[in-house]
Amino acid sequence: MEKVFVSGGTGYIALHCIAKLIKNGYRVKTSLRSLNRKNEVISSISNIVNCENKIEFCELDLLKDKGWNNAIKECQYVLHTASPVSLLLTHDPNSLIKPAVDGLERCLKAAVKNKVKRFVMTSSFSAIGAGSKDFELDDNNWTDLKNPNISPYDISKTKAEMFMWKYINDLDDSMKIEVCSINPVIVIGPSLSKDVGVSNTVIKKLLDGSSPMAPKFGINLVDVKDVADMHVEAMVNKQASGKRFLLSAETMWFPKVSKILRDNHFIKAPRFTAPNFLIKILAIFDKELKIVLFYLGFKNSLRSNNASKILNWKPRKINKAIIDTAKQLYDFGILK
Image (tube, rainbow, N blue to C red; front, side, top):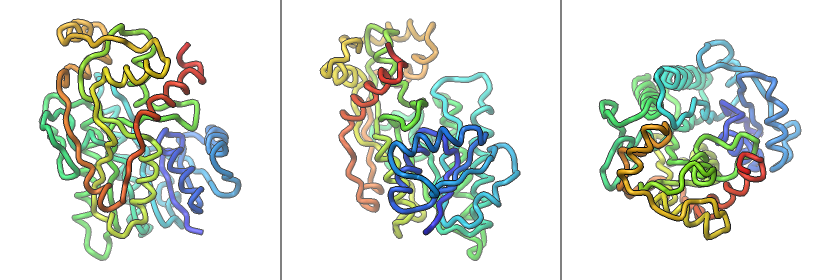
């Protein structure tokens, strides 16, 4: 039975990947910042699939060298999902950038040393089109690090992915391993643990009563189950090596997300669309709103060409993920 190393095992996407891998007959080794959270992972995965004797744990830190080589030893594949996530602006960009880049470097170098069959990086749309108002974007686009409209998170994901491609390309052919990246847009859908994921904040924001109206900007969404499926498919698909996989199931105006919620009896979702000038005023007092200012009134069109053609991806309907996420937020008591 082949073994897969998954970094950051408590993560929102990581848990779905681990469950998918075990369902598909793989053994999993996953890293945690503290082994005190081991039972949390086991409990979360056990709700989906029997993981007894199919998962093992190790303690690793993205900012420390210790343990990475031994962790990946005897693993045939690596899914590097661990990276700090924040949708908010920060006064200390390095709190996101340094662990993202340094953690990627440590994991990748250990994978190369252990000659794994394939290394799959969880990158992001942040590395493809952050701060861009190009109408059409696909797997070949890259975020411009000189763009003043990108966030520290965008920089962290772009720099980390750039490091991966450069490092592999610079290796002697005898040392190279196969790599690819998964670049999802905003990931939504129920979590396997009580940690519902940072990206599900977009649904929470519409239901927590903090805004009576929804700002008008385009939002790109993908179901977390699709993201896990594509990680595993990219891991084994012969044609996936050397490719980037932008994952976007649907792009819609943000007020449409609110309408979907209202149509499914989540009546706290805003009924009206906010004029842009009002959002600009409210953003003075709301840090989360500041993120959308640049994108007000803009909706792009994304092309997931590689995922469609190479991985044969047929996205799940995003409406169900929106509704199921809202239900879980109430079930967990995050929303009253």
